[in-house]
Length: 311
Ligand code: CP
Image 1 (cartoon, protein in one colour):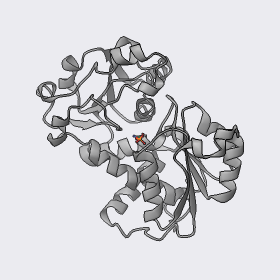
Image 2 (cartoon, protein in one colour):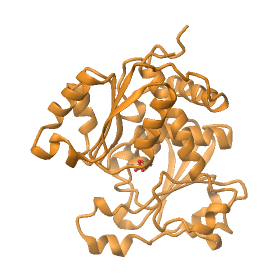
Image 3 (spheres, protein in one colour):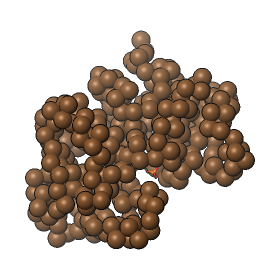
Image 4 (cartoon, rainbow, N blue to C red):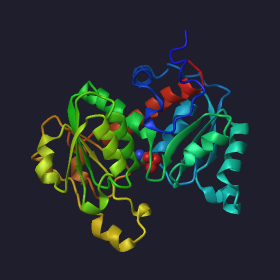
């Protein structure tokens, strides 16, 4: 009997496109795959994934492609839009129509907010949003939640601190929205005034009665936090280079700051990291960001197998 018939053929544009139960099923499937590398090994043989990346990526693109190959499927696509006909002025709608006529599913990243939603309206194949500008990154959220579930043993009753660029950080927006559906989560938003969390995210939290506060100080709040979610200040989202330079090193997590943190706190980061986590932290047992990136491949395997109806 198929495990996740509900997800088959569906697009994933925002984190709440899947119910909590569907997400739990995906996490269980990802854990099964992690524990048995042969599970679902050939399940996607003969299926094609188009990966269309209009913006740079290491983890998301490579983990999706690794996921599809590990499931026995194949990949086509581009990592550089300059090598596609987008460079000649082809519209996103036409590019997507073409990709959907060649492939069984499309994973795409764009610098434009709403691009994945638009693409899904022109696509006969399911579309997975791999990041649309400063808006959302739902498969990073699946990765983050799976990591918390594995390392804390639950997705409820903890305090999460989001630190860094909370204005443009799509991984923060998606994760905060997703966590608003879980029980007893407290959020602390740590950012400079110029990069505070958007009002619409705060509105969602208020509507869901999520307790949150905002601060500029990592030092003063780190001791309360169970999950610290560090983020990069993103040069590519700034209009003004001087503003980026002024803000880029506002927060640097180092051994000194970690001395005030809980012994069991976990440190997440969607990566790439620039300066915001000192390399000395990588050997701290609380650093979970490389493990997190690996969980990303397992949850994307679970997602692709489910969307393609390969279970
Ligand atoms: N976390 C993440 O989206 O990383 P990439 O930009 O390398 O894909």
